[in-house]
Length: 369
Image 1 (cartoon, rainbow, N blue to C red):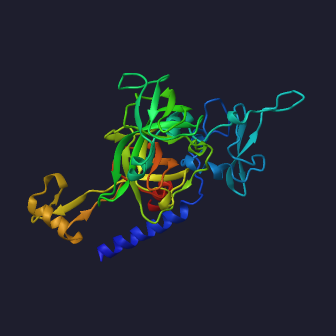
Image 2: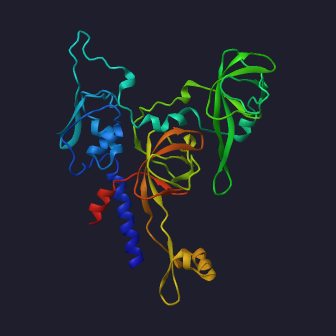
């Protein structure tokens, strides 16, 4: 009876969380009534001043007739909190400069979704591609310099006939990503340099125009495409995947990660992940085994027999609740993986932590209480 009741309560909480997570806006205690935008602000930062869940900023601006595009907020704009049909909204009072042309703002001056400096290197550098496909791309044979390592200004030889004037990135192999079952998720490739074709032939020449690390023979080249420069003006939305995702790896090979760290997810375009998707991060709750004396035994203290029992049947182990770690937002997607930025964390984030549809913790707590 008690087990059935627990399952019913869990079902109610899950159902309630799905209802309240959609577009509910919960104002932060002590929020300001207005705010003047300054250079360096982001949409996330501004919304964090007003909301418990700052990723809801499109809703906060959603019905404001003064902002056709919620991303077109500029430094010196005054944002005022109002209520429309009982719902909180931010309206903008732009700074009007007295000039014949009126207010003129460069498009690049608009406040971005998140701090571009944090993700700019990853918009063009890191990619995840098919391993066999990458092995077929044109290869660096060497260069005019006798050195094994090539840097800016050096000319390298490419084993392919390339189009004169085209620009390419030079990539080295990174990590091989795979599922726990061993299914390949792709090959990480890391940008080492960029250059332009200065001579075309069976062996083409590329002059290196920039470098992030030294280039060596055996590296591959890939075209640098305009669409790889992903816009930072995407709109955040709750990720709604049929299966939960998980943290695949830290971009910097870290064991533990926190706010503003970049991570790989084990889901991508093929799974329905898009730039702007927001996930809540959870750590799996531990399993407790009850020993023969009726006492709970932590995983670190289990005997071999108790480990065997815990794996034999779910009835032999009591799983503790999953632990909330924080939130992340996806900013770049590949076929089967994605890159996300951890926007907030209560505790350290690790590889294999679960990613699920975000819900408002404050609403859940108030419901339970």
